[in-house]
Amino acid sequence: MNDLLTFELEPWKVVEAEALRAFPNECCGFLFGQMTEHGRHFTEAMPVENAQTGDQRRRFAIDQRDYLRAERHALASGTTLLGIYHSHPRHPAVPSIHDLRVALPFFSYLIASTYPDRVERVRSWQLNEAGRFFEEPIQIPSHG
Amino acid sequence: MANLIIPTPLRKFTGGAATFSADTPTVGALLQALAEAHPGLQPHVYDADGALRHFIRVYVGDEDIEALDGVATALEHNTEVSIIPAIAGGTSDPS
Image (cartoon, rainbow over all chains, first blue to last red; front, side):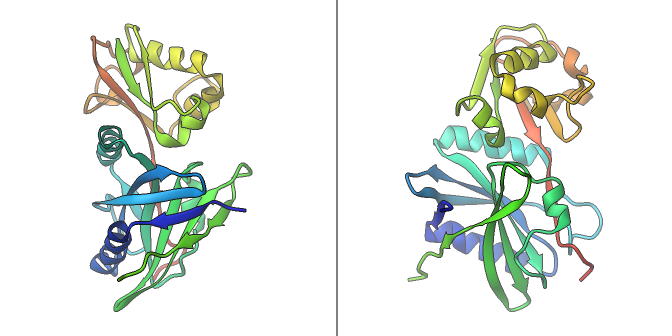
């Protein structure tokens, strides 16, 4: 049984809004929260600039200084840097070979499949011991 | 005493510890002390030739050690050192 990912409404809204704002380019950012008895609970999203040089419609990169800022923020706020989100404009929310190539263990990789007028689906993936992605179940927060 | 921030993906090798502190003269000595204290980290920090793996960067304060003296960069008291993994990706095909 895979761990369940739960979200406060705010970070979920940030991921969706950033994916739409960046379209047709890829957005990216960090996700913070806590490990829980049943999985992971996300409390905050931190958008960062896509530092990819060249075509940002199908690639993203995160600047090292932004990563430094994220780990410092987690330590200062008593949270844990649990994952990375990015968008796949006009593509499914499934990891690509490029995602796999540089993926790290432990992180939840949230991917938002995005079209001009909507975020079609958000899915999350984590690397297993064999170096393959498995999907993490998400409990989507109510939009109230 | 320098304080090293361990990135979350590597904390399973440090028993969950987020930081590591040691009184060492250089960045290289600090990383060696870390790897000796937590041997499971060794292959994730160093390659087979004993060099730092190419997809991680090490910062002293806000500076990449590549812009300083590399692993020979001297550490002062209360210096913050960070291991930073490369984060990137993207879709497979052109849009």
